[in-house]
Image (tube, rainbow, N blue to C red; front, side, top):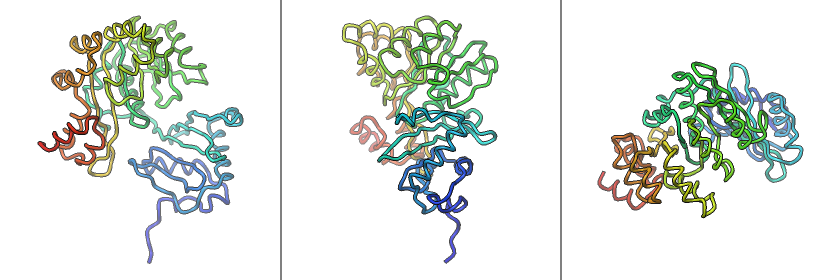
Length: 372
């Protein structure tokens, strides 16, 4: 019985026996709309497309074949193998003309090398096509303060930030400084000057880059991630100087985001940090990707904007009231994660099961879906 060619049959066979051109793999990933490429021993080359895994053929990758492909990755990236030779993980980006940019993470598992490659297409993302609402983008209109984009790994935080930075770049005369690990989207100078610094290549780390940025006449700073006490403290201090600061955290709700920041500080500093956050915070956007009824992935957002009422809740440690504030603040562009999921369900874009699996308050969502 003749079948159509599988997704991997256009590639060379015998992966474990012969050298495969890495560029062919990358090109096919771009053509198939893959978001990630997995090179892991004991599996065929695997693409992640629309949240689903697609195996390329039946040939399992062997450690020596992965080693050869990783050599090609370093060659394409014009990068030394110093970290991986020291048995450390390595994380960097590379660019291939007319094809795209790729974020690479190389690591060891079960004693052999593996790699996961994120596909980043040339050009900047279109927020309308991606479903990023204007209520999120409007946070980029601020001239000062702190905007946080949060969510788990792979939920599109970098993409949302790229859209916001692009909006500023096209509309304002200013100096934008980004600190990223690694750089994903390339911003060309438009009305703004855009300085992009890659951690470990252009600067030793986030903290040193942030301290240096304050001497570089910044108007807007993108700090790739607030990782610890030092970077959080420095980011808050920088936002107090009158610049617009963007950063990310791996948190699932607005209240969790503020609690995460507070918990990093010693107890005797937390009251002061609440006062500082109440003054400088412009908004918190929490996002996740969920499967839609047509099999694609759709972004869902929780949006908190720092109204006077919200600032008072932060200052007075009434974070449990933030959900109510977001529900009441729909006219000001706010929404809760569960409210957004319920709206998508009512529009027929996601299933009831997806809404329940993705919500923050399960019992309340069961009741809301029952009355939907």
